[in-house]
Image (cartoon, rainbow over the protein chains, first blue to last red):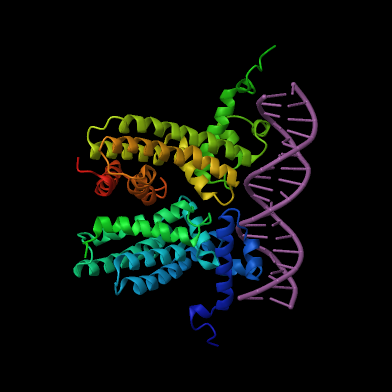
Length: 215
Length: 215
DNA sequence: GTCTATAGCAAGATAGAC
DNA sequence: GTCTATCTTGCTATAGAC
């Protein structure tokens, strides 16, 4: 009695987590269509039926992995934002360090989060619009909001010359993250740590030419 | 006698073209795995066997469509480069007009070239590396080279303040094309002509703050 | 070269025992 | 809830007539 007090306790949460982790890896490695539920079950160490007991179908498993995964990554980036953008000692250095850490967190993430995000981007036209919306809100838009908030604080202290903090955060991302993302096809092609740092540093220099105060 | 004088005459070139066009559309609409050779044959108005007579397998059909398609798009962009970047009357206007036309040529292309390019990007990890290399050379890298060449000419005439024309062309693309490409997931989500023009114009203003001479 | 028909297989989803 | 075994579908690729 009472063994199902919380939703999380239904069906052993560790197995559910194993299924989602396996789904993330296999979907990321193979893409949605090529990924077989058999392979996911094998990699999770459960039977296929167990997967169908927890998830209505392959699509629901994918959606669940997408939304839980993007929250994990966002949470990680949120921590990086606090670490690098709270107390600024040197703008060029701190903005570059954050850019490097963020690029590695997104494009070189463990547990195949990177490959899975690439699969999500490949499936935008097949994805239900509301799932894509939620993924964007919980992922890219959340990070953008948090960065904009830090930039506003820097502007208030005279460190940046900004009138629209949201736009500045967008250009910061465009200049320091997108070149790395584009060059590697979102983490699919290899890139050295040195090259990441160089691209991030170049981007920050450009960003400061647009938004710096010379302070 | 002599009906097979040129390779192009083998097997009616119009049918070959129809198959490649159909492949481009179906691969673009469905993605590689979901696209069935049956559907491609039906859309081309030929039987499936005819496809297998011309192409060894589904993968070769995909590769052929990829490389012929990227040449078409590059050719189109090459014409736009000559049209907008040869005689500069007003930098902001000419650079914006080119950015708008290029974005529409790539992200709103007829015959599903846009959707097919999106599928290629989704398949980078499954694609043979040499095919990806050739696709990059014939596509993005070719356009970049041509833009850099025009920028060098402008720098020589004192219109731009540039030391590395290749880098300038990369930043121009990053600032005027990538925001549109990112926002639409490479043409998957709709965007208005006004918004394209606004994003392109903003990007050019940023570009000129980085590379303009004030002339 | 082109078509109709089919072999052979992989994968999503389900049934039924425990 | 979990597993083994199976049903069913849809697809790539081929065979064989014209």
